[in-house]
Length: 247
Image (tube, rainbow, N blue to C red; front, side, top):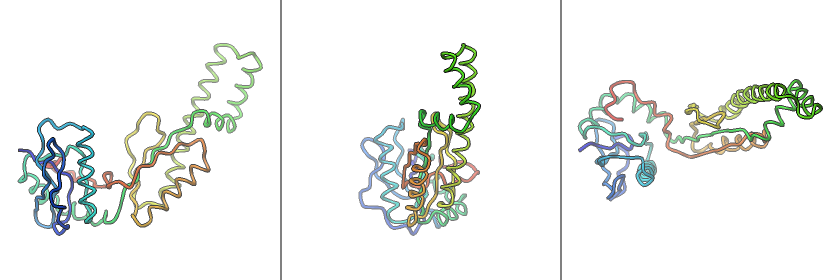
């Protein structure tokens, strides 16, 4: 049977809670596979694994329980190896990388910050900052709405100004928040968000990042922030580029 991998820890990591269960229905017992200085937290992999809410939560719970005893490198949901032997081989092959990551991520957590524009508020900002766009809008109003061409011209001008503001705001958000983090990892672009960033922070100073978010929110009310954390540092595990025996 294939082996499902939740995360990687030092071999000296405290024992897992007795009776811990992971993904699957019924839930499968969690165990460890050890090789040298490393241990992988694993279970059997259920057949036809899908990203169902129950299993996503179980994956997260195993990482939370294991992480309470020490640093764990979290694997993404769906990380599967052929068997325990393949997991042990991956630990041996990537030992230097995983040990470096365990040290770098010790007592660290990830906070994901996404930002989008409040559409109505950003239009006010764009009009206030762009006299040419404002003049086009005023001319259209004076002409009873303007011709079809006038409306197209105004729409294009507004869209261009908003796109410029998106780039500017994304850069400013990163510049304001980055000094409060150990590292920053850009996330995938998604519809509606002008920026999607994950920040690696020391658990003892994470409040500094959150306070910086609140200050940015107050200073730029046309920005809408979505903050998730503390999370296992998924974005900072940096899988080794060699053969993907685990994944």
